[in-house]
Length: 210
Image (tube, rainbow, N blue to C red; front, side, top):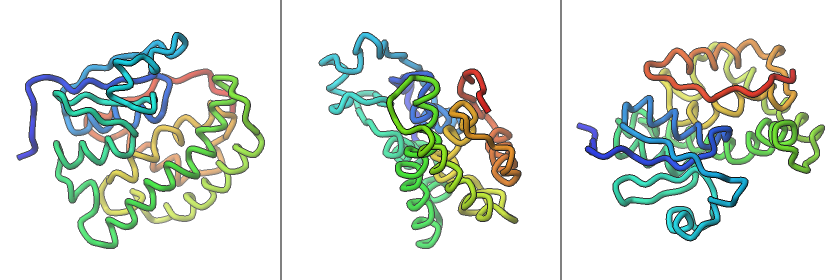
């Protein structure tokens, strides 16, 4: 049986962050009791000494699981799958599945972060990045994913895996970065599949720009 704690997992987050939503979505899908702790990023709460003990780089998300501290969204969802879920279902049942899940986690940290995530940072937060380059990277990624998802429900297996959880948030919110999902029906179908999962929890939407 998956482990369950009496005390909720504390999720330290910025509610507009897709990295943080990735963790909240995993917690909810696994039916793990949790509490959101929204940090005042504008006043550098993420650089306070007490938070740096949880996240030495001062980054969100971070969790406190009854004294076990962990940061980095992909590391956290992997931990949650191992501790509270069926690890093989989420991480991969075969060497091939495990490698594919890891590849998509790398894409989440690479192409998704530098594409749709970066585009959204420009439009929502005014971060000084090359918006056109970020949008172009997003569309290159989405073109690949659109082909990959032909005839598939999920990114890796015949069930949701960590690949789908890691990919969902920033792709679902890509229009907030002026990256339209209209040309990608397979991606939109895949997003709808994630949203239909039991205990799905969404991320608050900002004004849609595309």
